[in-house]
Length: 288
Image 1 (cartoon, rainbow, N blue to C red):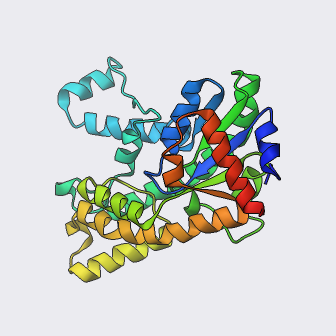
Image 2 (image 1 turned 90 degrees about the vertical axis):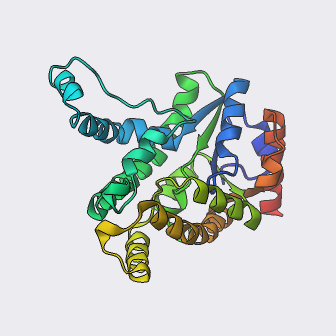
Image 3 (image 1 turned 30 degrees about the horizontal axis):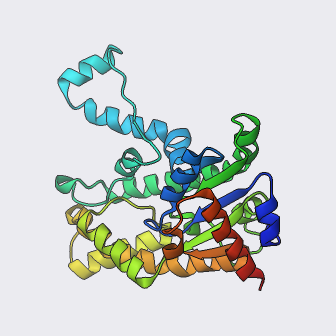
């Protein structure tokens, strides 16, 4: 770790932290609080993915839909309108919409092969966007004048690294520049996340082999061909399996590469001072 003791972290003139964990554990809330306090630069991996690496894919997807409408097609062909996404730290819907859901087109699905290709694009983009955090550590201070840096990682960080490989290229580079901090939820948090997802299923990133196995398993269990799969039912079916897969991978990243703070403790944090105290305590526990 870049901070060998809690005291070293607290006295660092330029702190650099990367938060990771399952969605809904408070990463973005804390990042926004620190940013608004004025001393922390907020780097969002998901935002970087959707703007720097997949922005053109997202815009083309909008244009493809618009080209089906004669009125909009004419305006697009004459360069009379400009279509782009309004992706923000808090609103990642354009990225999610592009990733889509596989299955029946009459229910909003896309062909599985197209879905798989978009998943591959996301993986490449997430690796690049995560590594881009490294130059932003210096850029945040040199260009924008922020003394401290916080990286809000994607919920699928655990899918693009091997936490048990001491030479993992992403984790090796990342931990040379930032302190990795897991926001660890409980089983109750996982249940609530699954229930929330069930109410409003949204596109997700899945590792390719897991995705293929899940797709085959769902089709066999329900006896339906690719083009008849209910998109929302499929991703509901696979989400809890994905969550179960991810939790131990998050734990392994924290054990081998960083520290852990409970999501319940993070939820009580409302100031940068409280945040620093929580991180310092996590460092103490990791070296005890």
